[in-house]
Image (cartoon, rainbow, N blue to C red; front, side, top):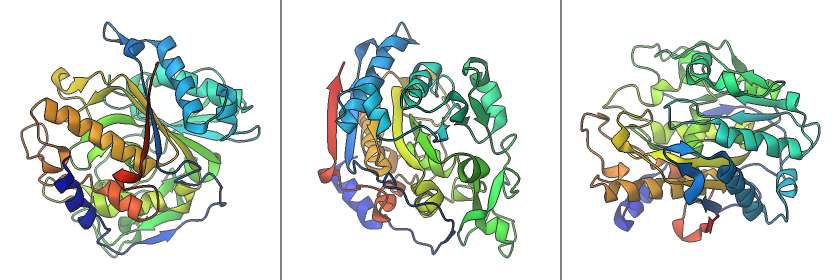
Length: 364
């Protein structure tokens, strides 16, 4: 992403449609952009991947270093205690699709250990993914520790997603566009409802996105892992290759109080990434070992950095930046919209000005 393109996107990045939010949540001092707005910590370890396999001990060390660097805490447990305490029910929004570039045990298990170190009981930790079928197909269910709870909102993916079983009728974002062919007078066609997991079962959430490009959104990082992973009726944001509404959809949904007040920490898994053809790996040639984890309470700042990382890799591999990509057989969307990140910043969800981001590189 060059400066000219970035400035053009800054000027264009506003939600072009009116929206209405029906959602309440207890105000939190940890609400996005959290206690460290604009701060992103990037922890890199050459030892995190060995022979194509993730190495759990180096990754655990990366998590320990990253949490301490983000918070300024002297020890691992102290860092986690800035976010969690006994009595909390903590949800973890994982990203298990796109094997092998997905949430695996090497990252998730030490995150669970960190939450427990703050005094949270294992039965008060909930691992969540929107679709049960994805949890099963990814094999995640086989290695999660005993006692931990697992939740989903729907059984499996469908094109039309207006049913609200598994979702909360009292928490929604209403937008004036629907999936093509649906009745615009149907309120459920205009609304995206929050998963019951988010509204009823947890009081805090950790967001664990993965470093990937995306055919419609440009990139799928912290913001999209929340908007499209914790709400229904999301397909209307990109129903076909000629119609993309990511910039109108993602920022309002993430700004809903039920999200903004509950999601308190973001850890972006960039050990392995996808730089083209994502979010599902379409060829081994598009996967790369970035060997980095990113830490933030500010999802906008995190996503801006992740976007730059993906663009740098794309340019190195002779591809156009995501905002300038053209259909090529691996992705047919005419207009990718990574500017949803800047628009989210303009809604107050985080720092969208690159010059004001405090990026801290650490090697372990």
